[in-house]
Length: 345
Ligand code: TXA
Ligand code: MG
Image (cartoon, rainbow, N blue to C red; front, side):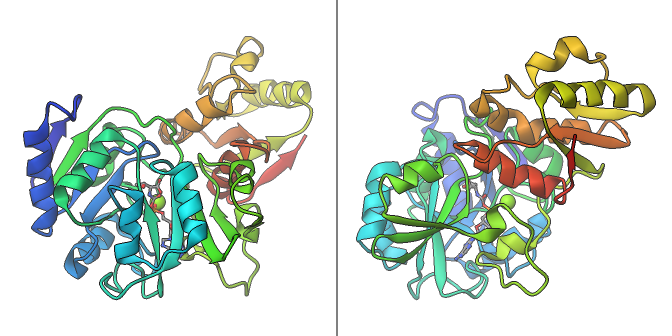
């Protein structure tokens, strides 16, 4: 398949390009597009055949359901059974990096939801995503636009590397602002939700809007042997570089000294803080940002994991993120990338 790469720098002025992409979607084809979180691989969310093509293009197990993307928060009502908790979350956080799991309506095919009776709904704020969905006039089913098991793509180059030849078109809208996938919550009842995947909308922000916010155990821990995952995505190894990742925890100066010593004995790629640069040899270093700047770290994490994975190093070292604020989303992605390998220094 010949994949068309279409640069979109100004969605207002490039309606013709976006109409062309929307037409591909309506005809059952696949289009990758930028969102404020990561790039998505879109297909018509009402079309069973398009969903099957998405699973095939990504090499993704078909029991891992897709998020449907809508142009306006109110549109959720057409595809899912909404309640007041949804309306309050939508008012506070949509359009934006929040996905809400709700009971699904009949018209969403089982292939989209992996056979579940719930559907995940998200209204992205990125202008290209918004316009594409609005022009298509259907909900757009879209997982992250990476090959299954790779880090999510945060720029068009990542999508091209993974999916060129497997999709009809890729809209290049530059780098994603947040860099980590959306926060996912499941509505349990009135005023009660469970956080399934932390992201740009933090636990504290959710607590401002909903009285009871549970955190699914798999957000911070490995699933126990017989534990049933609350979200199918939890059972798959995600964001996994081919080189083993080891997370370091401990007093900052001790961790930096450990890294400096390791550099003298083995080939290691290091996702370091900017503050550590003067103390480390300038070899295979991937600065993630300042220690306290979690937003900068979120934005660069997936890109740096891809780059570190190409170094041929023996090991990739990274810091164990804090669990507070946006740190919880970083923590959740990093423990998966590291297959839960944490070294206390
Ligand atoms: O930011 C994002 O959410 C991006 C952009 C493209 O919107 N999308 C994304 O999709 O990250 P994906 O498919 O890579 O991750 C969706 C996650 C999966 O772990 C899946 O298991 C979970 O959402 N999910 C989808 N539908 C669900 C449902 N009905 N119940 C529970 N979990 C669900
Ligand atoms: Mg994904």
